[in-house]
Image (cartoon, rainbow, N blue to C red; front, side, top):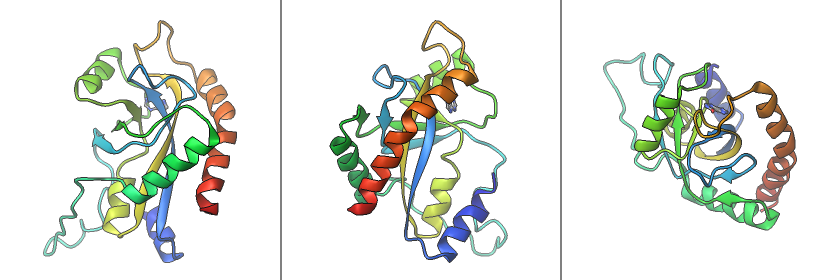
Length: 182
Ligand code: HPA
């Protein structure tokens, strides 16, 4: 995924804010399939991705503040929209971004849980950091599409993920529409 090109194009097109929709695995017991989460924090476990716009100019590395990776005003808009939709959601959570494309082992998920992660996905980083580098407001609307590895007795299938995505997409769209209406 060319995160740098995607974010750059949005910036050039005049975007000021980005809501990322992410399918995730649920780690915390509250994060069952079909549940929504608007994470307030993340931990980046990815490696080897093009993760900055400042890599080419080693004379002038810019260190962005990333203490709070998501825009709080944008998060609050998403939370209000989810509340109005009447869906199950968590107004905070820690998003773990793993490298993929494979799913995690049971031990890896246990480690993420010890690290304090509530949900796990593969596409939230470096996107969130690149948005910050470009001064774009950024928030994540995460839909849980499977229990993370070891969080159910069954193995994870693409069929269950696709079914949960299919079932949840209507609510994703109506939530986004609500945010856009303001
Ligand atoms: N792990 C990582 N990424 C994911 C998962 C998962 O279990 N489900 C959907 N995206």
